[in-house]
Image (cartoon, rainbow, N blue to C red):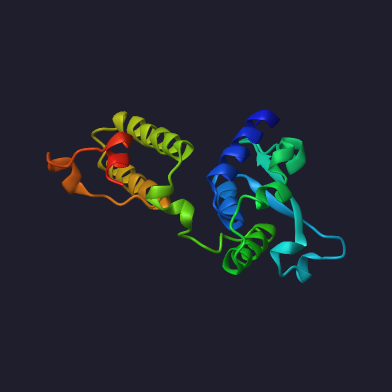
Length: 193
């Protein structure tokens, strides 16, 4: 992945995040590796507080196993941790969650919060929606070539369920069958506030 494209992706994820821990989970959710850069004198085993993190690096892995690593400053000076922290929540809960997410990332463990703010349907971004549509289209194409294979269809349904769950989308069959339910436009939404 070219540095410029990775920089744009990281910038979009940073903009969509409301806290440092959410940013870490969003980065990891994209399949990227994010590693903290710790203050001098702080070792991996001594790390307990998010304030001990002074920067980060992003590692991208290609499908064939090739890796490329970038410092935050190399992606854009507005993407340094110091700059990003100015925009994010700095309450004790967020700081503690950030420390836990940094530790999980550093040790290659699963994210600490499995249903963070980025998994709520209200917080889906344009990037998330594009990704959902792309994955759904791929599932549909795979099923289209095997319409008579019940195993392929059940596997497609399972993949759709996983897709819904991974983005926190709830399935509401009533919306599809009830014609009285219509989509609201941003102008309609603004009038009701």
